Image (cartoon, rainbow, N blue to C red):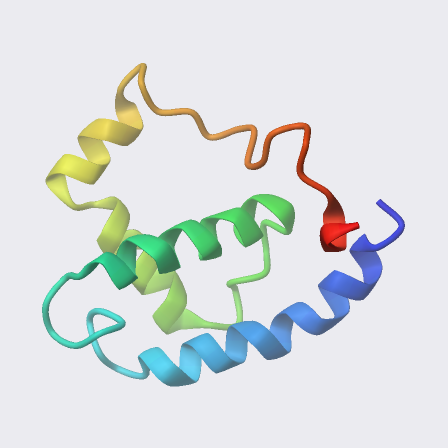
Length: 98
């Protein structure tokens, strides 16, 4: 918890890099959905859970999250009993790998 302020301080800069990389493309690796988009959705969603307003300055990232979450099979999975939003990491995970 004591490391959270430092993480949140650097987060906008990291998200800006992702936003710049995505640009006006629909998906991160081009015009077709790839495994990269699944990874990016996970990364962005975890940060959004950690800080709900973190994506507000980045319209293209918010649009990406909406577009990905609206995919038929993804949306069905996220509504199913198999989907678990939390915990993000198991109890063995250490912040900062320490």
